Length: 323
Image 1 (cartoon, rainbow, N blue to C red):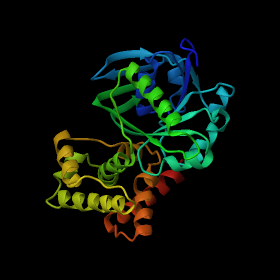
Image 2: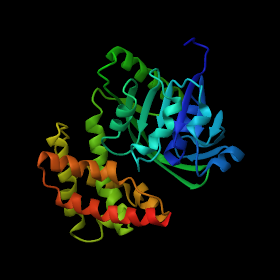
Image 3: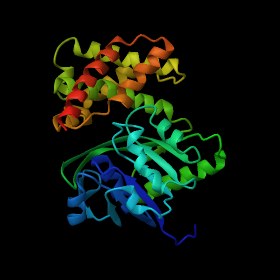
Image 4: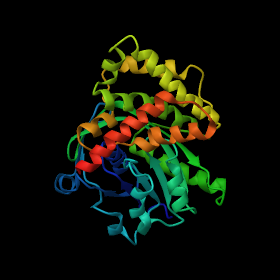
């Protein structure tokens, strides 16, 4: 690609987190940004995206193109497709991307959960997949209006493709991190991203699942009874044991570290809690289902995790039937 040519980027999923990355990419050098919007499509087409950020101030911006489905961008050769949509249906939700994927495309997966990369690899075995762990606090109180707090870190690594050269994949990773740098956000690159993904799942299994079930923010839950912190620690340690069984070693004392971090952050409301309140399906499979199944495969006992998983499946079923 010539130095002056635009870099075509498609952002798939324009929720709060997707909109934050749309903001970052809209400021990156040479990026020509297309976004796929659903529920907020009309608002974004009319008024663009407005973001109020504790780190970046207040901004209004318009992506270069706003579309409802990827098929509207057929014929555009995207260098990067950034997937920030919720992984409620990990395999089914990516099928609309078929018209815009080629072997020259790099897919960037910015989602909660573990095992997220597998549906992309199975559907498009020739592409580079960059796996990302997002520590960004953002909400969308009204369509197209984003509120971002001080939490802002993106952790990235290659999900290795044995059919591609490591040097090619590394160059594609470096190309994407250059966009994040020029857009003005923090990132870290890891040679193995899986420990970071599993650490985030340990965090999400506890706080997302519990807040969705109890309708309490994290701080209120942790102070709700003398049993709350010991329960949270046992739950986290179940997931840590599953990670170890599949070859992902997490740091000693991680559960204590994450509980201490949560205590310091105060009254956190989680995305799963918000999804339930708004009647939206929750990301249960990639956060709880995969660890449950991996635990069963590896003979790791996870009674607390399995209990939460079964209860949340029942809630999700009701949410789905109301749609």
